[in-house]
Image 1: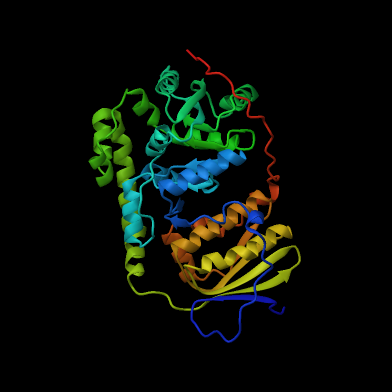
Image 2: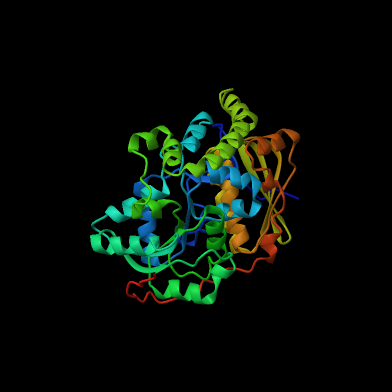
Length: 415
């Protein structure tokens, strides 16, 4: 087959100007591809600060568009390596915040430009402290009457969050907590933010299962935030949070947590030795200067992209116009990686976005021509699962989010 379109990125002085697929307005851009996203040890992490995050939240609220926020920390990292369903819930999120100083340290070692910890508890606090804009929040989960107490406190303070609903669903399964009555009650509240206070695995599974049924635009799992807000547990002082020793304070406040931190610490040490150290050494071995090129070939109901050179940096951005074209033409995408000698965290972030967008449209992503060297790079970065064809995409119907009017309800007192 003849090459009909090519993009070249990298060395100056290319022989001919590159040809690109048809460009479209930003409004036609698939969701997720504009993120400054990086792949860090199998997790997607957004390089985002609080100001940008707040802007994204306000836009989603204004447009009533779903924005699923995940808050990966070390516990998320370890669980994602052990539980594929949990990992998928993070991969399919719209924004992933680095909630944990060890992730920031690892990013620095690997020269990944993620510099700011954006914790879920801090996000809740920022939303509370805003005086220029007030969002309506529904509190879901928590033990006993904690959510009711926090909701009452929010409304008494007249802060940036107005509680319009509370529900403690108990300790049922994800299926039991996903009944039509529960979802209808959440939607009827007219909330802007759905704050979920279940354990991480259950919360992520519940959010993913009900993603297309929930009409609340901002949804996230806030973990122990409800305990901090209710005052049942004191949060660590800022200097402990900024230096990465918040876990010591948490053990002091909740002694039973030592088992989790011990298990996570041992698992993290193994990851550091087996993956982070080799990657850190490679990152300092010198920049990859080989020119990155994309050759496009039409192939029936699939778009085949032959990649070559160093898949790094701006090469990730050059991949996105082709993906937009594939989505418009309802084509699956095959990436032939036989000519790729290097791949960085930015490009892994691009692969995550491509996989997510194609899957949402019921289209497949397949990667072929993986050399032993490149497979080793996938393994060290803990992204070997991307090499398996995403067959679930062809079975997943295109999502249709039901419209639910943002009717404001009164604060619901749940005892």
